[in-house]
Image 1: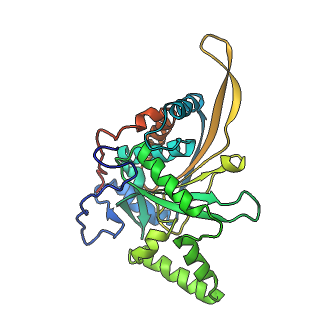
Image 2: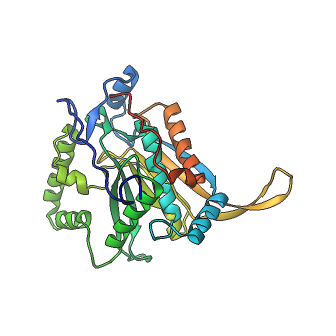
Image 3: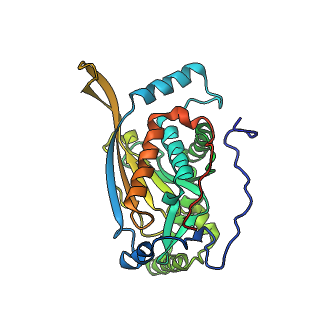
Length: 308
């Protein structure tokens, strides 16, 4: 149980009051530095605004934690995995540093109404294998067990190569249109999204309208890359991580010990907050990854974006 509800059960929260200047998926930021008000006009696309960072994470203690949980037995009836820790760490980071959940649309900054993560999934590990993307919506108060249950349900629902999710079905429908009509449809959707008028049905199925996009490149045994963030949509961050590897390092007692590591590469939109804020948020996420026991309980407080 997570509080008084079953793990993975969505939290029902009252609808946010909206002002005329808000979007259906976010609230307009009105209390930010003047510089950040002008920046979206100077750097009008996410490609203009990308900043990247790489991190080498010691996961030796994380592996011990996962082994311990497998031995003890999980309260959700399924083993935890590293991707569960990553996803839960992102959710917790956003709950404590909500400014990284902002996005730019129509040259204006907004605080996103939900915490959503898109994840690329390879249904079949071959060159010809089908790939899909799932988007999961989480509550800021979710624990690692809530995140794991919801993630497992989505993966189970989408791993069958014979089954398409709503995103795949929409993409296939558009793909069957003539080239000129495809350009018209996509151009119209972009124009509507720019003004905040895009149908919510498209926003719900679009993996590009999310808080963070994640790709686990370790599953294909390849090093992480700096993945661009898409100009289409509202995603303001992309996280890629590679396979685990072992290195010999010098311990405090000057002995040589073996430790396990995973490399992370993160790309973010620098228009949503200043460098100090972005750095502190990413460090917060990495701290949770290395100390997953902190994710077993809901956060004591849920921070509000003070730019609203």
